[in-house]
Amino acid sequence: MSETESICPICQKKLRVEVAEENGKVIMTKKCSEHGVFRSVHWQSLKTMRYAEDFDLFKYFDEADGETVSVSGCPYMCSSCESHVSDTVIGVIDLTKRCNLKCSICFATFPEHEVAYEPSKEEIVKILTFLSQRNPKPPAILFSGGEPLMRSDIAEIISAAHQLKFMTILATNGLPMAKSPELAAKLKKSGLNIVYLQFDSLDDGFYEKIRGKKLLADKLKVVEICRKYDIEIILVTTLIQSFNDVETGRLIRFAAENTDIIRGLIFQPVAFTGRATDMPDRENHRSWRFAEDTEAQTGGEIAAADLFPLSVMVPPIKIMSKFMKKPWPLFSCSPYCGLVNWVYVSKDLKLIPINHFVDFKKFFKSITKTAQSVESKGKLSLLSSLFIAAMQSLNWPLVTKEIGFFTLMKTVLRMHVFPSYASLGPVRRRVFLLGCMAFMDSYNLDLNRLKRCVIHYATPDLKIIPFCAYNNIHRVDVEEKHKLPEKT
Image (cartoon, rainbow, N blue to C red; front, side):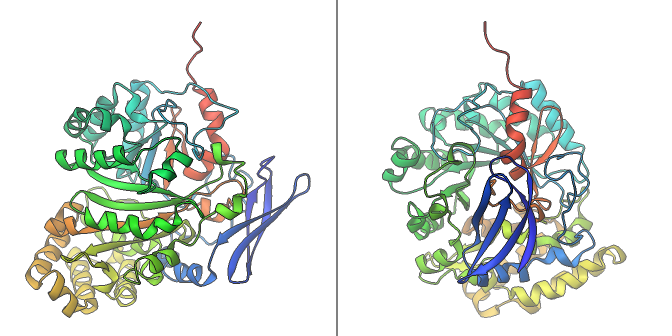
């Protein structure tokens, strides 16, 4: 069906990979001369994978250079490698290795290499300044760990990022906030935009098995605390087949019931790296059925065909960049990285994906043509093209019923004149982002996919490393190089 390159999970030598269809699934097979054959599920459904490929609109632009890797330094020479296609959309900075949990599926901790890694505030400000000077500048910074809230200077770090005009995102298990609600007020004042909250289940049994203790009450408490201080939340669920994949629908409903404060729900299929590297029956727990499970568990309100690759957003971003002082990077990640959509929640809590309001095929076909010639068009011409494409693609009966004609017109005009998230106005409190972003591990690493990664770690020595390359190849070396000196 196709070929790519990967690495041996044991010795990390680069290997050729065959990608082939088997009984409707897509399987990756690679062979190391020393360690044998490795097989991994690439996609659970060939049909869904082909659908995602059809909406990978990045392929229509000059920035895309085909699906060939064959660069001797990839994936070992990150930051100095010229084969990487995508710019940084989210810059990730690990603030500490300290954590108040010891999760069996933590991708950031290798049991045989647990070191004290905690960059100083001065080092972090240096990283932030470096990222702020990149062209294009990443719109968002995600502070990760470990548990970032274990740092006493976390508010000062967030404030530094806020002053550099980054959207600030905090990845946390939420436990320190649940214990000390006043911490949320401090973080809000410092400029925190989004809490990226670990939220795996609505059943304490799952937390006990995977996280080591009952956590649901604390998770729900954090939601209420963030509501009080108006800190928006993106729930992030580690998805494990045969464990919590049966809860996909329940978690979607929970997000829908709390759209006043929950801006998104992102499922992340477990990656077999870090503590999960040697998880028994690995391939039996690899979850790639998110689209199909979503359709089944929402009673068809959100169908598999309502989910799209993030790269569907490339044409509108190229157009809207003409109206920004500092253009955004393109959301040019591979269609194999995951599927997303924005879901509107009606007053009676019905789930309506936004492609039900707008005919995506018609809309994106039109604006892709416009975006391909964006440099030769004036702002008025671009606005007209975008507006006409939107008006011709709308499902007017549904729009009138659920949103209202005048509300829509005001929202569209705001978005065209002042393109920003805030321009959505009150509509944004009824919409949440639903998605599944699958990290790669050394078993299913695909270098063609890796070179389009848009989520990049930034290190103390000012290197930019793609997310999945960092966690599978570079993390141990970076942490060893920058670990804290041992106490004597």
